[in-house]
Length: 301
Image (cartoon, rainbow, N blue to C red; front, side, top):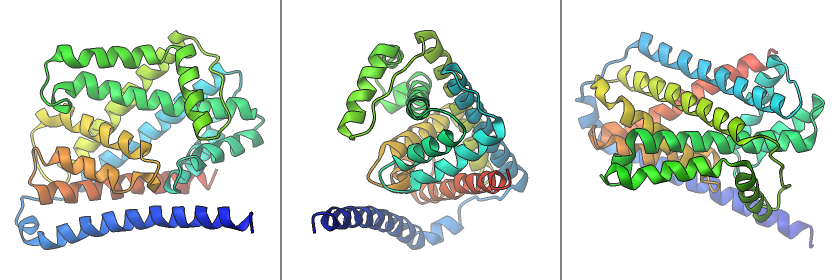
């Protein structure tokens, strides 16, 4: 009886999380349905070339992210072939759609172990890869669009946030902070055997990656409806911020609903609310399509 109850509790929690996602998506869909008249009258267009270009850019960025992760593992003393890294990256990424957010890391660790990479290094590389990626995205948001994301405060009010994020990547501070969080989650602690210079270099690479994501997102929107390219910095920041918050929302698989809700909030500053809602939902399908294409390729490797 003792063994059965925890399993039942976990099942109920997981079911509740999926139910939350379904409820959120239901209200999104219902909202679009009730505003279909205004949506149908909006100035839409469907540019296949731009849509295809945006997908290619996302896939290219995935490859860039894989190379960053391979370099991170190399700096920790191991070499991983690109084909193997590609397969591990996309197979394990499917774990983010399972509540808890730990399955992608566990999947990555399991597959890395098969390639001769120690559990300690694979866990450290996975956690550090995600942490530096999130910090890079937040730095992009703060530096590029800080005033808009912080209620129009002067730059002097948000530049210290960028400094705090940069200080956080100092290895001893980062290691101790991440280990506190890992202990709270009852996970194995990690050791960051990299220098501050290494962490800074990787963070800059992740900022570049978020910039590519941002450009791809802007091209994706432009394939649906025309808008001024002057919005590129803000829309790129909105994409990065919504993605990060969705990722950190451990209570929903894949940040479903959370990412879209934040996107709608920021997109509605420049697009009618029904249009912003539809763009946010379509962007989820857009990203999922890129992931499925890469997953299909990885299954052939």
